[in-house]
Amino acid sequence: MNKKAYIDSKKSQISLAQASLRNQQLQDQIDQLVQEKLNVFGQEIRKIVEQHQDSRLPLSIFKSASSTLEIIVKYLHEAERRNLADIALHLQRDQRTIWHAYQRSRRKKSGPVRERSTKKSKQISTITIPVSLFARRQFSPLEVLASYLHEQHRLSFAEISRALSLSPKTVWTVYQRKLSKEQQPHHREQHKNNES
Figure (cartoon, rainbow, N blue to C red):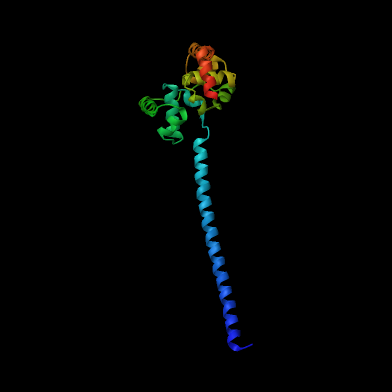
């Protein structure tokens, strides 16, 4: 083998080794970049999923002088840091309605009312209510809340009234109003259309 051919073959081996090393370094950089992008993308996906998961409201927040809608809006805006447009979308209400409800809730003083602690009241205080229930526009937020507590958690009207700081007669009336709305033919047809 001649000397020049030997040197050329060594150069090509070195060039191939260098090219292979550069390719590996480039591949490592690409892998690192892809991993960083996947991490960012994963965080964005988690954030979107968290925003669209059905939030749950603690029952204890409803013991206030504010209306049910005002309490829901204030809690979602202040405790969960949701913007008012997102709340309006989630509750299927006009943004102006949500804005006004929030403004009214801020003006009202809503300090917690103390009650004597019993085993039953401790169980009741752990109840949470899905926010999605309040998107049903055919019922008032208080009707939805009272019926959910009565039907899903089997609370009596007296227990619900204590939990919400309302009279038992008010809770009974609100619940009966919801039942009568469900019995109306127009409501049943509208409810069928909403489900499909």
